[in-house]
Amino acid sequence: MVKLSVIIITKNEAANIRACLESVAWADEIVVVDSNSSDATTAICEEFGARVYVHDWPGFGPQKNRALGYASHDWILSIDADERVTPELRAEIVAATNRPHDHAAFRMPRLSSFCGRYIRHSGWYPDYVARLFRRGTAGFSDDRVHERLIVSGSTGTLRHHLIHETFHDLESLLAKVNHYSTAGALMLNEKNKSASLKRAVISALWAFFRSYVLRAGFLDGREGFMIAVSTAEVTYYRYAKLMLLKKH
Image 1 (cartoon, rainbow, N blue to C red):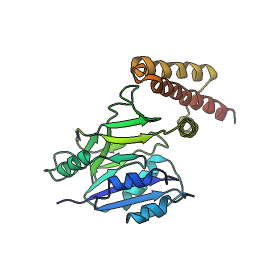
Image 2 (cartoon, rainbow, N blue to C red):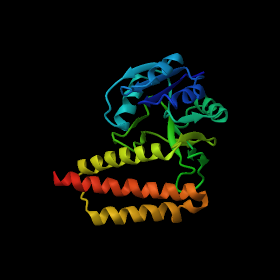
Image 3 (cartoon, one colour):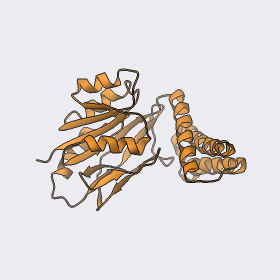
Image 4 (cartoon, rainbow, N blue to C red):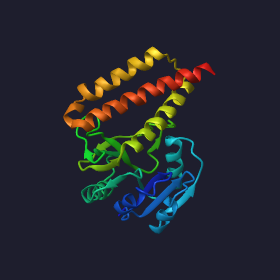
């Protein structure tokens, strides 16, 4: 039977990491790369026998590649601290990795919650994410945010959900809006993209319309409206911050 390494990147995830680790405790190896957490994150990881490495924060893609570099087994499962592997997904992962290697990687549908409600529209579902891959066949892009897995070979599709327990309250949502818009502005600036107040406003309005109308966010009730607003906010602040960066 082939062996599986789980890789996780963390920073101040004490509220989330225990449930995450419990869902992957069956793996042969757990590797955690932490970005100088000031809470109990690393202590909790060590309780589960994880190998913990502490590094500065270079962005999501580079940090995940660091974690990948520490993994030692045949197959890799990349998971975030606020995600959980269900028993059904676990069985499917084990079966997939022990079949003849017809795929280099596998993607899985992700079901995300927002303030206590699982979201089935708004562009959030089924939200296929490639997270399971054979060693040596894939790596992460160097993007600061919204990194992607770059696979050399074919990618199969699993049926069962990866659960994503995101945004328990609006405070955590607003913190993420600020963080993601800053990282997005820096990425655009590195690519020498232009920005203006007009572009920030128009892009934000389009982001709201796409989420709430085109992607049927209205079917997710009040949570769908809040998601559309937050999507517009991230977009607006990304271009507004880029505009100010260009002034310096």
